[in-house]
Length: 232
Image (tube, rainbow, N blue to C red; front, side, top):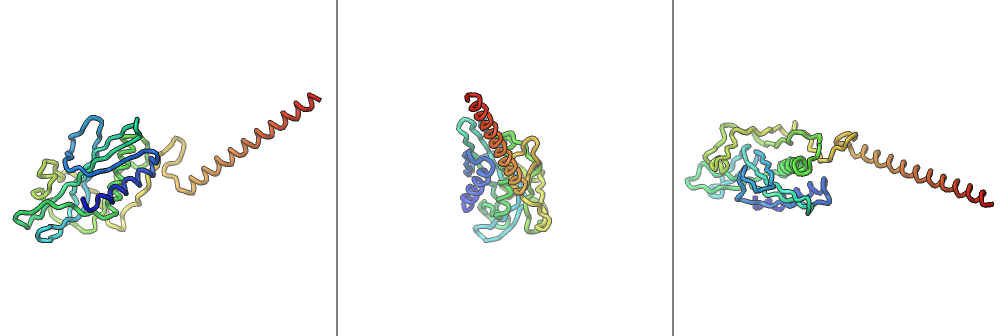
């Protein structure tokens, strides 16, 4: 996580600016974060996702689809500021006699998908927004995994936050759905409108506003003419 911290921070802030440009949100790692242990006013979101690991002792590589990513979120409406704490749980090599816990390595695509799911949850919990998206964007597994989850070498399992009961929805690259941006669904407006529809809507509003201004000017001129004739 240390190597990718800036990537996570930057991508998260870009996604939040897309939906709430006037509000400031920050994300920072916190190794002390625990599931369901929340301070007052904080909310939780967690995902089990796919990542790769490499042992720092023997250089062995392995992959897992049961990597726990935990987020705690807090929103201050008075300050228009929000913060997110994040913990990525580690795993260790099953071959080495005294292995160290290693940080997972995520693809850019899966980082993006994890954070899009996080932003959607923030909008839903902190802003009470209504969105068309009702399910999480699935993670991508770039290899086929066989065998049970190695809970003896999983940090989350060893701390009692077992991931085996959770199922991670994964699809092949060719079947992976599009990842959409997140926009608020207003009453009477078709959700997730395309840029073309949005531009058309803006153009119509602009034309209507100009017509209204023109009508007001015409009425004003007529009134002035009538008053002038009356005065004569």
